[in-house]
Picture 1 (cartoon, rainbow, N blue to C red):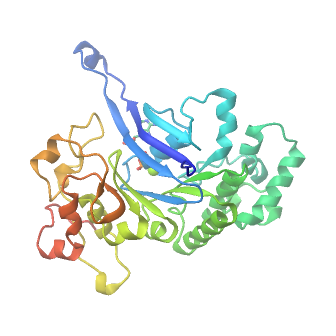
Picture 2 (picture 1 turned 180 degrees about the vertical axis):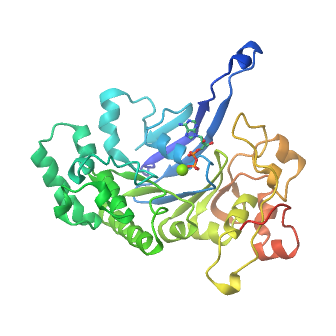
Picture 3 (picture 1 turned 90 degrees about the vertical axis):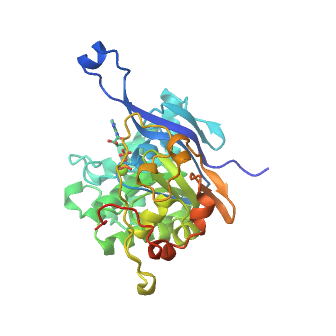
Length: 352
Ligand SMILES: Nc1ncnc2c1ncn2[C@@H]1O[C@H](COP(=O)(O)OP(=O)(O)O)[C@@H](O)[C@H]1O
Ligand SMILES: [Mg+2]
Protein backbone atom coordinates (compact mmCIF):
# COMPACT_ATOMS: atom_id res chain seq x y z
CA UNK A 1 0.00 0.00 0.00
CA UNK A 2 1.25 3.49 -0.79
CA UNK A 3 1.84 5.99 1.98
CA UNK A 4 -1.07 8.27 2.88
CA UNK A 5 -0.85 11.87 1.69
CA UNK A 6 1.07 14.18 3.99
CA UNK A 7 -1.94 16.41 4.38
CA UNK A 8 -5.51 15.54 3.58
CA UNK A 9 -8.31 18.04 4.00
CA UNK A 10 -11.77 16.62 3.52
CA UNK A 11 -14.75 18.92 3.19
CA UNK A 12 -13.15 21.51 5.45
CA UNK A 13 -15.46 24.31 6.51
CA UNK A 14 -14.83 27.61 8.25
CA UNK A 15 -17.71 29.92 9.00
CA UNK A 16 -17.20 33.21 10.80
CA UNK A 17 -20.41 34.06 12.64
CA UNK A 18 -21.64 37.60 12.19
CA UNK A 19 -22.73 39.33 15.33
CA UNK A 20 -26.52 39.67 15.54
CA UNK A 21 -28.00 43.04 16.12
CA UNK A 22 -30.75 43.47 18.70
CA UNK A 23 -33.15 43.88 15.76
CA UNK A 24 -32.12 40.50 14.34
CA UNK A 25 -32.73 38.88 17.70
CA UNK A 26 -36.18 40.47 18.13
CA UNK A 27 -37.13 39.61 14.57
CA UNK A 28 -36.11 36.03 15.26
CA UNK A 29 -33.62 36.07 12.40
CA UNK A 30 -31.19 33.17 12.46
CA UNK A 31 -27.55 33.97 13.14
CA UNK A 32 -25.67 34.55 9.89
CA UNK A 33 -22.13 33.65 9.00
CA UNK A 34 -19.41 34.37 6.46
CA UNK A 35 -18.72 31.11 4.65
CA UNK A 36 -15.00 31.75 4.19
CA UNK A 37 -14.18 28.10 3.45
CA UNK A 38 -17.08 25.91 2.42
CA UNK A 39 -16.33 22.24 1.95
CA UNK A 40 -12.78 22.22 0.60
CA UNK A 41 -11.10 18.87 -0.05
CA UNK A 42 -7.43 18.96 -1.01
CA UNK A 43 -4.40 16.74 -0.51
CA UNK A 44 -0.71 17.61 -0.38
CA UNK A 45 1.87 14.86 -0.75
CA UNK A 46 5.32 14.87 0.83
CA UNK A 47 7.81 16.94 -1.15
CA UNK A 48 5.13 18.44 -3.38
CA UNK A 49 4.03 22.03 -4.00
CA UNK A 50 0.35 22.74 -4.30
CA UNK A 51 -0.42 26.24 -5.54
CA UNK A 52 -3.65 27.77 -4.29
CA UNK A 53 -4.88 30.64 -6.43
CA UNK A 54 -8.02 32.76 -6.54
CA UNK A 55 -9.16 36.34 -6.16
CA UNK A 56 -8.71 38.20 -2.92
CA UNK A 57 -11.43 37.27 -0.41
CA UNK A 58 -11.92 33.76 -1.80
CA UNK A 59 -10.78 32.09 1.45
CA UNK A 60 -7.18 31.15 0.66
CA UNK A 61 -5.66 32.51 3.84
CA UNK A 62 -8.44 31.02 5.94
CA UNK A 63 -7.79 27.62 4.34
CA UNK A 64 -4.06 27.97 5.11
CA UNK A 65 -4.86 28.75 8.73
CA UNK A 66 -7.21 25.76 8.95
CA UNK A 67 -4.64 23.26 7.70
CA UNK A 68 -2.04 24.62 10.09
CA UNK A 69 -4.54 24.47 12.96
CA UNK A 70 -4.38 28.20 13.60
CA UNK A 71 -8.15 28.32 13.06
CA UNK A 72 -10.57 25.85 14.57
CA UNK A 73 -12.60 24.30 11.71
CA UNK A 74 -16.39 24.57 11.71
CA UNK A 75 -16.57 21.18 10.01
CA UNK A 76 -14.72 18.60 7.98
CA UNK A 77 -11.73 16.37 8.57
CA UNK A 78 -8.04 17.08 8.58
CA UNK A 79 -5.49 14.29 8.43
CA UNK A 80 -1.73 14.54 8.62
CA UNK A 81 0.28 11.43 7.74
CA UNK A 82 -3.01 9.55 7.77
CA UNK A 83 -3.91 10.61 11.30
CA UNK A 84 -6.90 12.72 12.22
CA UNK A 85 -5.44 15.88 13.74
CA UNK A 86 -8.63 17.92 14.00
CA UNK A 87 -9.08 17.08 17.67
CA UNK A 88 -5.54 17.64 18.87
CA UNK A 89 -5.44 19.92 21.89
CA UNK A 90 -2.97 21.30 24.40
CA UNK A 91 0.38 19.61 24.54
CA UNK A 92 -0.34 17.21 21.66
CA UNK A 93 -1.29 20.14 19.41
CA UNK A 94 1.75 22.12 20.44
CA UNK A 95 4.05 19.26 19.64
CA UNK A 96 2.27 18.59 16.30
CA UNK A 97 2.84 22.22 15.25
CA UNK A 98 6.43 21.52 14.35
CA UNK A 99 5.11 19.62 11.30
CA UNK A 100 3.35 22.53 9.67
CA UNK A 101 4.65 26.07 9.75
CA UNK A 102 3.30 29.23 8.16
CA UNK A 103 4.99 32.11 6.40
CA UNK A 104 2.37 34.79 6.88
CA UNK A 105 0.91 37.09 4.28
CA UNK A 106 2.08 40.30 5.93
CA UNK A 107 5.88 40.32 6.31
CA UNK A 108 5.76 43.50 8.39
CA UNK A 109 2.88 42.71 10.72
CA UNK A 110 3.95 39.13 11.37
CA UNK A 111 7.36 40.07 12.76
CA UNK A 112 7.35 41.64 16.22
CA UNK A 113 9.35 44.89 15.79
CA UNK A 114 10.58 44.74 19.39
CA UNK A 115 12.30 41.38 18.98
CA UNK A 116 15.71 40.64 17.58
CA UNK A 117 16.26 38.24 14.70
CA UNK A 118 17.42 35.39 16.93
CA UNK A 119 14.34 35.75 19.14
CA UNK A 120 11.94 35.81 16.17
CA UNK A 121 13.52 32.90 14.36
CA UNK A 122 13.80 30.71 17.47
CA UNK A 123 10.22 31.32 18.58
CA UNK A 124 8.88 27.98 17.19
CA UNK A 125 11.88 26.15 18.68
CA UNK A 126 11.23 27.63 22.10
CA UNK A 127 7.51 26.80 21.78
CA UNK A 128 8.49 23.16 21.28
CA UNK A 129 10.31 22.86 24.60
CA UNK A 130 13.21 23.80 26.78
CA UNK A 131 16.19 25.31 25.02
CA UNK A 132 18.76 27.64 26.50
CA UNK A 133 19.35 31.06 24.96
CA UNK A 134 22.76 29.89 23.82
CA UNK A 135 21.31 26.82 22.09
CA UNK A 136 18.59 28.88 20.45
CA UNK A 137 21.11 31.41 19.13
CA UNK A 138 23.37 28.67 17.86
CA UNK A 139 20.55 27.01 15.94
CA UNK A 140 19.42 30.30 14.47
CA UNK A 141 22.96 31.22 13.42
CA UNK A 142 23.25 27.91 11.60
CA UNK A 143 19.91 28.48 9.88
CA UNK A 144 20.42 32.03 8.60
CA UNK A 145 22.77 31.19 5.70
CA UNK A 146 20.29 28.61 4.38
CA UNK A 147 17.81 31.44 3.74
CA UNK A 148 20.52 33.77 2.43
CA UNK A 149 20.96 35.95 5.52
CA UNK A 150 24.36 36.69 7.08
CA UNK A 151 24.88 34.74 10.32
CA UNK A 152 25.92 37.91 12.14
CA UNK A 153 22.50 39.56 11.90
CA UNK A 154 21.29 37.71 15.02
CA UNK A 155 20.92 40.88 17.06
CA UNK A 156 19.32 43.08 14.44
CA UNK A 157 15.67 44.15 14.40
CA UNK A 158 13.18 43.53 11.55
CA UNK A 159 13.04 47.21 10.54
CA UNK A 160 16.73 47.06 9.63
CA UNK A 161 15.88 44.72 6.74
CA UNK A 162 14.38 45.22 3.32
CA UNK A 163 11.10 43.48 2.41
CA UNK A 164 13.03 40.54 1.00
CA UNK A 165 15.18 40.34 4.13
CA UNK A 166 12.10 40.29 6.34
CA UNK A 167 10.61 37.53 4.24
CA UNK A 168 13.85 35.56 4.71
CA UNK A 169 13.52 36.01 8.48
CA UNK A 170 9.95 34.63 8.28
CA UNK A 171 11.19 31.72 6.25
CA UNK A 172 13.99 30.98 8.73
CA UNK A 173 11.42 31.03 11.53
CA UNK A 174 9.25 28.53 9.65
CA UNK A 175 12.25 26.28 8.95
CA UNK A 176 13.55 26.38 12.52
CA UNK A 177 11.61 23.30 13.67
CA UNK A 178 12.26 21.27 10.50
CA UNK A 179 8.62 21.15 9.35
CA UNK A 180 7.28 18.75 6.72
CA UNK A 181 4.90 21.31 5.23
CA UNK A 182 5.11 25.08 4.98
CA UNK A 183 2.08 27.19 4.18
CA UNK A 184 3.43 30.12 2.18
CA UNK A 185 0.79 32.83 2.19
CA UNK A 186 1.59 35.32 -0.61
CA UNK A 187 5.31 34.91 0.17
CA UNK A 188 6.50 37.29 -2.52
CA UNK A 189 3.61 39.63 -3.28
CA UNK A 190 5.02 42.51 -1.22
CA UNK A 191 8.39 42.30 -2.99
CA UNK A 192 9.74 43.71 -6.23
CA UNK A 193 10.15 41.36 -9.15
CA UNK A 194 13.89 40.67 -8.86
CA UNK A 195 13.58 39.85 -5.16
CA UNK A 196 10.51 37.68 -5.83
CA UNK A 197 12.60 35.52 -8.13
CA UNK A 198 15.39 35.18 -5.56
CA UNK A 199 12.98 34.11 -2.83
CA UNK A 200 11.17 31.66 -5.13
CA UNK A 201 14.49 30.12 -6.17
CA UNK A 202 15.53 29.74 -2.55
CA UNK A 203 12.19 28.10 -1.75
CA UNK A 204 12.58 25.61 -4.58
CA UNK A 205 16.18 24.78 -3.51
CA UNK A 206 15.14 24.34 0.12
CA UNK A 207 12.35 22.04 -0.97
CA UNK A 208 14.82 19.81 -2.84
CA UNK A 209 17.34 19.81 -0.01
CA UNK A 210 14.83 19.06 2.71
CA UNK A 211 11.99 17.21 0.99
CA UNK A 212 9.57 19.92 2.10
CA UNK A 213 5.99 20.22 0.92
CA UNK A 214 4.49 23.64 0.24
CA UNK A 215 1.03 25.03 0.09
CA UNK A 216 1.78 28.10 -2.00
CA UNK A 217 -1.01 30.63 -1.66
CA UNK A 218 -0.71 33.40 -4.20
CA UNK A 219 -2.43 35.36 -6.89
CA UNK A 220 0.82 35.31 -8.85
CA UNK A 221 0.18 32.78 -11.61
CA UNK A 222 3.80 33.01 -12.81
CA UNK A 223 5.00 31.92 -9.36
CA UNK A 224 2.64 28.96 -9.44
CA UNK A 225 3.77 28.03 -12.95
CA UNK A 226 7.40 28.14 -11.79
CA UNK A 227 7.15 26.43 -8.42
CA UNK A 228 4.00 24.30 -8.15
CA UNK A 229 3.24 20.72 -9.18
CA UNK A 230 -0.48 20.94 -8.61
CA UNK A 231 -2.70 24.00 -8.78
CA UNK A 232 -6.01 24.43 -6.96
CA UNK A 233 -8.33 27.28 -7.88
CA UNK A 234 -10.56 28.76 -5.22
CA UNK A 235 -13.67 30.84 -5.77
CA UNK A 236 -15.77 32.22 -2.92
CA UNK A 237 -14.86 29.59 -0.36
CA UNK A 238 -14.83 26.59 -2.66
CA UNK A 239 -12.37 24.82 -4.93
CA UNK A 240 -13.58 24.88 -8.51
CA UNK A 241 -10.65 23.28 -10.31
CA UNK A 242 -7.64 21.18 -9.28
CA UNK A 243 -5.02 19.55 -11.48
CA UNK A 244 -1.42 19.31 -12.69
CA UNK A 245 -0.12 22.84 -12.96
CA UNK A 246 0.98 22.94 -16.61
CA UNK A 247 -2.13 21.21 -17.89
CA UNK A 248 -4.44 23.54 -15.96
CA UNK A 249 -2.62 26.70 -17.02
CA UNK A 250 -2.54 25.61 -20.67
CA UNK A 251 -6.07 24.29 -20.91
CA UNK A 252 -8.23 25.42 -18.01
CA UNK A 253 -11.65 23.81 -17.86
CA UNK A 254 -13.76 25.73 -15.37
CA UNK A 255 -15.17 28.97 -16.79
CA UNK A 256 -13.81 30.85 -13.78
CA UNK A 257 -10.30 29.46 -14.25
CA UNK A 258 -10.45 30.45 -17.91
CA UNK A 259 -11.43 33.97 -16.95
CA UNK A 260 -8.86 34.21 -14.17
CA UNK A 261 -6.01 33.04 -16.42
CA UNK A 262 -7.09 35.11 -19.39
CA UNK A 263 -6.86 38.19 -17.18
CA UNK A 264 -3.16 37.47 -16.74
CA UNK A 265 -0.88 38.90 -19.42
CA UNK A 266 0.76 36.11 -21.39
CA UNK A 267 4.50 36.63 -22.03
CA UNK A 268 4.44 35.10 -25.51
CA UNK A 269 3.11 37.76 -27.89
CA UNK A 270 1.59 35.24 -30.30
CA UNK A 271 -0.55 33.90 -27.51
CA UNK A 272 -1.46 37.28 -26.13
CA UNK A 273 -5.21 37.44 -26.10
CA UNK A 274 -7.75 40.05 -25.44
CA UNK A 275 -8.47 40.21 -21.77
CA UNK A 276 -11.38 38.10 -20.79
CA UNK A 277 -13.91 40.09 -18.90
CA UNK A 278 -15.80 38.76 -15.93
CA UNK A 279 -19.03 40.58 -15.44
CA UNK A 280 -22.09 40.05 -13.33
CA UNK A 281 -22.70 40.36 -9.63
CA UNK A 282 -20.25 38.88 -7.20
CA UNK A 283 -22.32 36.75 -4.86
CA UNK A 284 -21.79 37.23 -1.17
CA UNK A 285 -20.05 34.90 1.23
CA UNK A 286 -22.76 35.55 3.81
CA UNK A 287 -25.06 32.53 3.80
CA UNK A 288 -24.64 31.99 0.04
CA UNK A 289 -27.50 30.70 -2.08
CA UNK A 290 -27.44 27.09 -3.32
CA UNK A 291 -26.01 26.32 -6.73
CA UNK A 292 -22.69 27.23 -8.32
CA UNK A 293 -21.23 30.40 -6.85
CA UNK A 294 -19.90 31.46 -10.20
CA UNK A 295 -23.30 31.13 -11.90
CA UNK A 296 -24.23 34.84 -11.70
CA UNK A 297 -21.04 35.74 -13.59
CA UNK A 298 -20.72 32.68 -15.85
CA UNK A 299 -21.16 32.93 -19.63
CA UNK A 300 -22.01 29.22 -19.81
CA UNK A 301 -24.66 29.16 -17.10
CA UNK A 302 -27.64 26.80 -17.46
CA UNK A 303 -30.64 26.46 -15.16
CA UNK A 304 -29.17 23.56 -13.27
CA UNK A 305 -26.18 25.67 -12.19
CA UNK A 306 -28.43 28.00 -10.21
CA UNK A 307 -30.03 25.27 -8.15
CA UNK A 308 -27.61 22.37 -7.87
CA UNK A 309 -24.07 22.46 -6.58
CA UNK A 310 -21.60 20.36 -8.57
CA UNK A 311 -18.83 18.89 -6.43
CA UNK A 312 -15.31 18.54 -7.84
CA UNK A 313 -15.32 15.60 -10.26
CA UNK A 314 -12.98 14.03 -12.81
CA UNK A 315 -13.36 15.22 -16.42
CA UNK A 316 -12.99 12.92 -19.42
CA UNK A 317 -9.90 13.80 -21.44
CA UNK A 318 -8.20 15.73 -18.62
CA UNK A 319 -6.06 13.32 -16.60
CA UNK A 320 -5.61 14.19 -12.94
CA UNK A 321 -8.12 17.03 -13.23
CA UNK A 322 -11.13 17.65 -10.99
CA UNK A 323 -13.59 20.39 -11.85
CA UNK A 324 -16.77 21.66 -10.20
CA UNK A 325 -18.83 22.47 -13.27
CA UNK A 326 -21.85 20.77 -14.82
CA UNK A 327 -20.62 21.68 -18.30
CA UNK A 328 -16.94 20.84 -17.75
CA UNK A 329 -16.63 18.56 -20.83
CA UNK A 330 -18.11 21.12 -23.22
CA UNK A 331 -16.38 24.15 -21.76
CA UNK A 332 -13.05 22.31 -21.45
CA UNK A 333 -13.12 21.50 -25.16
CA UNK A 334 -13.28 25.19 -26.12
CA UNK A 335 -9.87 26.75 -26.75
CA UNK A 336 -9.51 30.13 -25.04
CA UNK A 337 -8.92 31.87 -28.40
CA UNK A 338 -12.10 30.40 -29.87
CA UNK A 339 -13.96 31.45 -26.80
CA UNK A 340 -13.07 35.06 -27.38
CA UNK A 341 -13.48 34.96 -31.16
CA UNK A 342 -16.97 33.53 -30.85
CA UNK A 343 -17.97 36.56 -28.84
CA UNK A 344 -18.90 34.56 -25.79
CA UNK A 345 -17.26 37.11 -23.56
CA UNK A 346 -19.58 37.83 -20.70
CA UNK A 347 -20.90 41.34 -20.21
CA UNK A 348 -19.36 43.67 -17.69
CA UNK A 349 -16.58 46.13 -17.25
CA UNK A 350 -13.21 45.19 -18.69
CA UNK A 351 -10.63 43.95 -16.28
CA UNK A 352 -7.84 46.49 -16.34
N1 LIG B 1 -11.09 36.32 11.43
C1 LIG B 1 -12.08 36.59 10.57
N2 LIG B 1 -13.29 36.99 11.02
C2 LIG B 1 -14.30 37.25 10.16
N3 LIG B 1 -14.20 37.14 8.83
C3 LIG B 1 -13.02 36.75 8.33
C4 LIG B 1 -11.90 36.46 9.16
N4 LIG B 1 -10.86 36.08 8.37
C5 LIG B 1 -11.31 36.15 7.10
N5 LIG B 1 -12.61 36.53 7.07
C6 LIG B 1 -13.44 36.68 5.86
O1 LIG B 1 -13.38 35.46 5.16
C7 LIG B 1 -13.33 35.71 3.75
C8 LIG B 1 -12.10 35.05 3.16
O2 LIG B 1 -10.95 35.76 3.58
P1 LIG B 1 -9.45 35.26 3.32
O3 LIG B 1 -9.32 33.85 3.77
O4 LIG B 1 -8.54 36.24 3.93
O5 LIG B 1 -9.37 35.32 1.72
P2 LIG B 1 -8.09 35.46 0.76
O6 LIG B 1 -6.87 35.04 1.52
O7 LIG B 1 -8.40 34.56 -0.41
O8 LIG B 1 -8.03 36.88 0.33
C9 LIG B 1 -13.36 37.22 3.58
O9 LIG B 1 -14.71 37.59 3.34
C10 LIG B 1 -12.89 37.73 4.92
O10 LIG B 1 -13.43 38.99 5.18
MG1 LIG C 1 -5.13 36.05 1.90
